[in-house]
Length: 303
Figure (cartoon, rainbow, N blue to C red):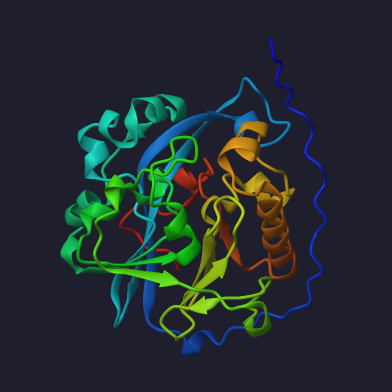
């Protein structure tokens, strides 16, 4: 019999960072940010955090963010699980995955938008942190939206990979896909603690940051509003401890699910450093249980 031992991860050195971050908030576009929790999953603390309690279970949200821009309209950041999963989670993401993550489906984003008085047909853009099923399943509910995804991520997500959590049936036929290309090394455009960025609308409101590691083309999204700035980490951090430590995810996630866990930790160092230098930055981890009581209930807005 082959025994699997969850060894301690090798250390990852923090990157050397020199930067300043300053925003002219009065020059930002008129915009708002809201969060929709569309489902929840259950996992052991030891899966989310190396060294975590193997008996303690965490109930984690699956979330979609609505960024409403005064000229670019409704923008989703991730799409969560959608109506296909609401109809049958055995269909998408499948019985095995649903059982593994303890999936409990709520109302998908398209339904919550309708109930709050928004027209889902007016969702013009979807920005993807990455293409895992719990982030990408709802894409097909918004067929007319432009899908923004890192080119490396789009390429990685074209075939179903059960262990890697790619299920392309929900997005493979999407017609309007814009593949993001971050700069080559000599043309980097630093922003905050990161070496490169894309200002999606060119007005400082929605900043896309390359954070590969969890997946090959993972990105995090910074939303700058008049009042506050919110860094949506995607799955660079499942829970706050992943970036506050930073503490890697558990053995199974590091070795099987993640593309390069050391890069994930390096990006977690960047997030922690940014928080320490500029504590006014509000950081939202991808599946932090405290996001459920801690963030305003939809359709309330963040500041």
